[in-house]
Image (spheres, helix red, strand yellow):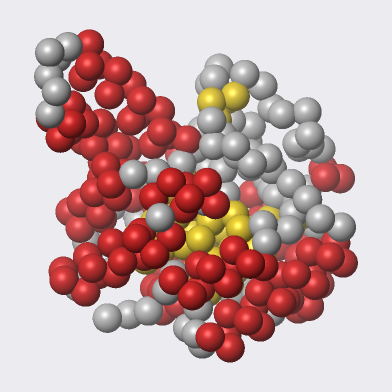
Length: 288
């Protein structure tokens, strides 16, 4: 079976993107795994620090590994938005396929130092590990937003510059790079999120020399995502849209079946709702 590194290379060559979807529970896992299997495409499951704490670090690693080995399905696991070296070590030790050290709120020199440390440690333990770094602050919460958070700026001067991307990648040795290009974590309640800076994505990909990751893609338009892939994005993160689908379907299930007590019956509509979202996104990302 191809490694995650090989799948990322293949995605770039085909001008498609690998879908990255976060989970907080078993229902999310099955929604993603079944959608990817149905469409026969690779997929990455992400777990943030909070999601890892809830699901279990070694437990989620074992779950993903079991499906990959049993069904020969290209499903991989990423330690999403990891803010300390100790938690990087924890994820790598548990057998994750990838990890992102998120130093986007740190001073640049400290971000570079800590990201490089994560890269060097990861490769010393597992030469195949994928380590991602991030520049530019886009927020932290995967939730429905009333407005763009005050601490997130979409002004041109706040977005990542190609030269800065090149410097960061060269200094840290990361395999993947996540820049701020007009994207935000979460999604706006009132409609589609602000447009992405597609030309900037193109310039950053050329300057950085490594595949790009688009975080916070829930709420971005289909057209923006297609253009971002064409410009050099190889992995796209979706979380908030899955959370909203889960909440809405679960709420309806409880309202329609108030006497039901079997969790697997109550939760089945939520799994199907998330699966539909994942299928739609995977078709978009893979030109299906």
